[in-house]
Image (cartoon, rainbow, N blue to C red; front, top):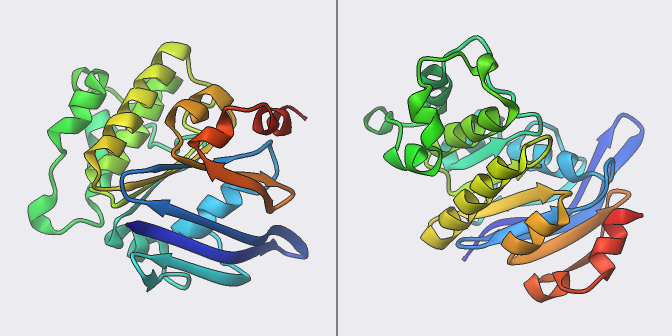
Length: 233
């Protein structure tokens, strides 16, 4: 089932056009990976989906509903959880308090931290009383994903979760994403530059250049050299 359908999306920063006719979809039980070098519009696409940037044209459908004019908190209440590039955890709040900020869009009876957050990222349970700013970069990334999972998302949007992360934690994050996919109750949209990480996880992919999609396909399309070369240019 297609959870997210973006069609012919355009987005501007003043006179500069960041997205040009971008179309992408994300289905439940699948990882859709958006690939591309720096500055090609990947983060702008995710910000548009999460409601952090207004679009200039096109449509954004979530579970068949037009959400293009909704506020970010309204999209979160529908089940869209966004983990931004750079993590953006609250450094002066404890790990426990950071996780509890994920309660905001939930109804009263669901304001609990799911045990699976600690099953996926055990280090968080041992650090509940520590301030977020005292964690390593990799631990902060785990915290940011854990906070998103507290929201019980139907769409999990991840912006470069491997950026600046040590290899051991990259593997942990990859295993967590694979587990969430196999649970088959959410769609996952992943922006990534680390080709091997994307290749191992993606069910479908799109490649962006200069604000446009220049290539897309299924997992088998990542086995050749064409996509890797586009990222290396």
